[in-house]
Image (tube, rainbow, N blue to C red):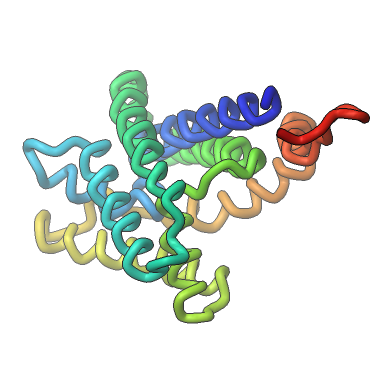
Length: 225
């Protein structure tokens, strides 16, 4: 029970770090992350919906699609993704407000800010995934499509990212008659976050410690309830 509580705390911490990483990447002014590109463009167009609000809507669509695709295989516990969505979306807005001061000018400061944001996001993903508590909506929809249609997870993940970016570009041109909210940073983050996650997972002792929590055994002589 103690380990389960710690795993959930780390999972929540990972979600919060993820939101901060997305906000940091966005504040670099080179475009946001791939999975956030569509809601960010929609938020730029809307006068009523914040970045967090449009992110919440997209993730709710992901959750609904998972339930439709998986049917009986969509277990009730997965509805907890709604709480994850609320937390993640709320902290995107909080992080964007907290980083109000971050407005780098010039390509080098922007690139540095982008890389820092990618590192934060990659670290957050590691902390979120290591406890093996719950699937987040963005990953859940990829898993659902992969399982429902028996497709390779990596290929579905790539197709999902490309689709979101393409839709973001489409709506950007429709709304602003040019690229806005999508840029070189979107592509750079799509390329480097994955390798950074792999690197951090192997090199940061904290990630190994979190993973070990799910493998911990009860003391000798104890019995399961």
